[in-house]
Length: 428
Image 1 (spheres, one colour):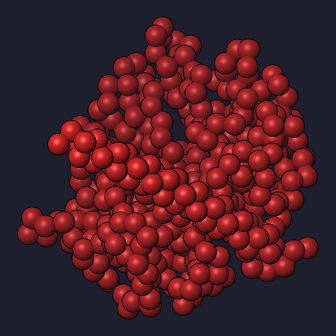
Image 2: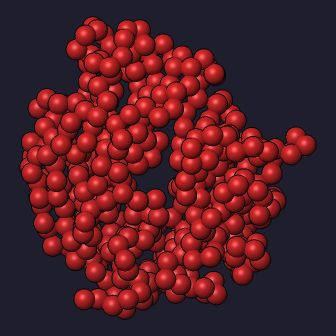
């Protein structure tokens, strides 16, 4: 009996050894297959036209907002630079300054760039920690003297500094590109009605909030006057721009749509979330009979397209929008007709697809997906690629991130490499 046991143990050891060998061999085959696939991928990408080929020399490539020419910010090595799309350095940031902070004027090159930035870069003085602004040639436009600040938009920004009159109180103010204060709350208002909080609604409009939070004023920076005032109406609210001369007032979790005069649009539901208008339509969510409904509304707040059972709807560009479901994405026209659909490589996480406030963050992976010149960046649940009007892949989904920039380029990321891809048109 013992001899039989020894034989069985020996056989088991042999089988384990053989199994381990097979697994090792299979792992080697899998590794070779992955290496071969990656080599084929790199060969395929090498055939594409590049303004700046994929390289590990750069990190954090982003288009500069609101510039009068197409330029990008990045790290090259450990240096902060401004460069053209072919990598030609136009400005190396002095070591005494730090500008590379996405919250301070850098953004991905998506369809929301608008005029934000106005060609000015916010910088932090590395010694004092204060904030100021430089132009694209490195000239100091506004000295670093602010505790906090925002990017410029429509020729204005918001800065914050300690009150000159009241100890322990910080005040905010809108300023123009010369640094001139457009509304000096300490000269114009009385304590305790000091308007210490300022938010940028859009363009020339700023919402001023009093220190005690009971009064709000709408300031027109172009006319330099107060055009609306709310006092004691509600305990808290803010304003956000929806685009196309429409606005939204948010109070708690309720959103009320406003017209160009900031008056409520009547007989329109209270929304739970709203995106922005594009091509006359805005994706929104609201409640009907206790159920969350989503769809596209027009500038009068009327529902034009209902989109049940989707996680997120993109903005319209070139007459098309993306509708994201858990397992697939559809592209529709402005009548709501499905043009094509694609199955996703991996199901979407519903948690990233439900922004819950006006002006809030869009789902990061989906916000970059939109059409331009008959092609669109598209996310397949795992990676980004480029599709055409028929939904066919022009460039397979291989990038960890991709976003349109300039007139015919896209900033792309692949593993540890970054570059600027030519998409449409021709290289000059």
